[in-house]
Image 1 (cartoon, one colour):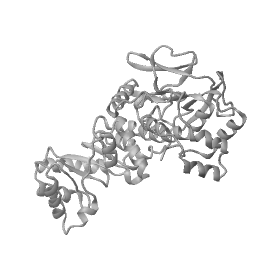
Image 2 (spheres, helix red, strand yellow; image 1 turned 120 degrees about the horizontal axis):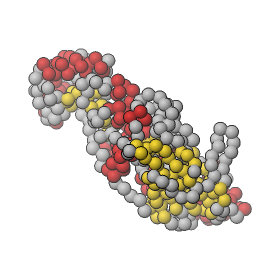
Image 3 (cartoon, helix red, strand yellow; image 1 turned 45 degrees about the vertical axis):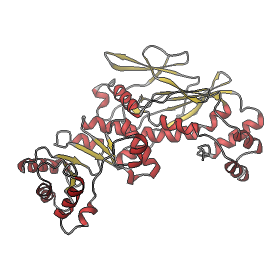
Image 4 (tube, one colour; image 1 turned 180 degrees about the horizontal axis):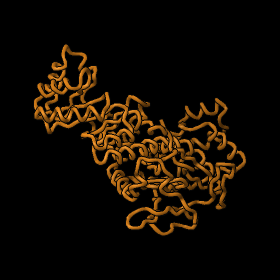
Length: 418
């Protein structure tokens, strides 16, 4: 099955009309951008480009899908013939590299081709980039808040099963170090972690018996969940069973700042000074930042990262900016856009970003932000996930400490038309 049907009906009703009146082959340029960042956010992170390019390579309609579209009155017979032969030859796509930072107005993706080709790609582009960029933007803030301590993505049970895989990838490229999702681990090579839930402990007559089973199976390199009943006693039982060489304990409830401090002191008193503490339980960037001085060795984040920490979309839009080589723009109240295909570059001073320049005349001074990703319908940009992750960390290092802070503030940069 291709990805062509992963679209809104109106994309194909528009295409049918374009074909009827002869407009479908007119040269056109579309841009994907966000007019704003979520309130208080200083930057966003582009994610999902690699997944989108894979989906574009599978963008087609089979006979059964076309029969459904004609039978439902969605498209005309002429449109069905067009879609049966549809391909991306003649389409060029330029985009911000995955992992790059974006700001209001940043042209994160540009599609150049025909009007017919460009319009049918809108829903797929926005579906992938809006979801993955929302997750990556939240994950980046959590990574900054963690201050270099490892972060585990563990939100699979809090989102759609396919979205969970995409979210694990987006979180990893933005600074998380591992995931609990095995499908993401296999597909993308992300390190996976995970040991046991409270149900495991409750299945045994005693907590010691549960710990003994886990250690017998996985060795002392495992992590024991110590808060099923009483945290202090759970830690004592864990060290009694596994010894002072136990790798880690996990605390998933209570006042985390208070509990991890008590846990550290107890572990040290028991001779388990090398046993690490993993903190979980409804964490977000603000809770992680509040635990900045607490003796937490790593964090596990679920719901808040896979849902964008309160902002489940990047609010990207996809707009026609050129037709027949002529700039066009939407000008309705509060939804103004700027016509013409934009080129973007980021100016830096002493290694820090100072301005993002958008120009319809080509790249200005500074670091060019868009790269070629599709040429004449063929994907020409395939960085590895590790390369994407490295690029993100480098781009993030260009922001000032103020821009990276958790406190509310305006966007660190704003796209400036020149």
